Image 1: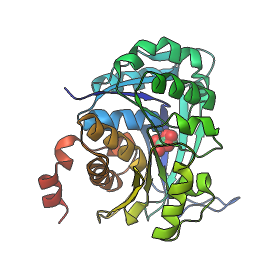
Image 2 (image 1 turned 30 degrees about the vertical axis):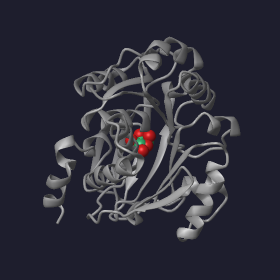
Image 3 (image 1 turned 180 degrees about the vertical axis):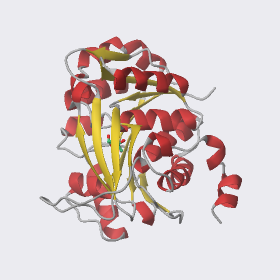
Image 4 (image 1 turned 90 degrees about the vertical axis):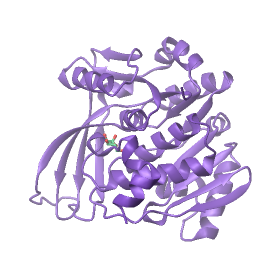
Length: 309
Ligand code: RIB
């Protein structure tokens, strides 16, 4: 059996509208279809990892409502250990409002609800799970003090702590030192490094600044331009896979879940990123967050190449 992946993070229900283009501030536009879908960066990463064959447990908080109980049932059906998902009476489950334009670009606003109450004491409750885990994956849709606390505990136990710093917000330098790997998109990498990414030279500079904060391995996803890896001081570019994108939602989440699955299977970082590129490429060809996450058989190399040639 592969190593155990502990995802700590958010779960949301996504309310999605397709639009020809994204509205400007103050503008009303008539959109297209509406649909509701399971989302949340933490949950998307947990489900992505489970569908790709990972042995996954999820630490999260939902409200005492239909969205919360339905989400937990769905995670169970995906084979995820939900023992450490707690139900909160004070606030409702998280919700995200998403608009997706005809180029597949989106804009998202999240009402965090119960996600905002995931606290260090929940990490204490999940300590046994973390102890039995091997890789701990987090994002920034839950309180930063909880992320910092969990990173410290998990790194102290010798686990590989991976952070997807999304949505980007200022982070204490001490957090970077607890990380085995950071997986940031272009915007997040610019935010943390202060470097505008325009070419290979600037992406290397951004990665240097981030790794100098104390994180061993830096992965920067570059959308249709592929992914960049700084690992043990060496730089690598992993090419993108050309597909027709209909919705970028959860592509980054798929990528993070996939990297963890590959590392849990003892693949090296470059192999993990190459696998994750393939998985994220499938996600962008479909609408929605968890509705678009691929299953393992769809991303096995031969099958994938056959489908996408
Ligand atoms: O990364 C995509 C996710 O961001 C959506 O599912 C939405 O819930 C927000 O958390």
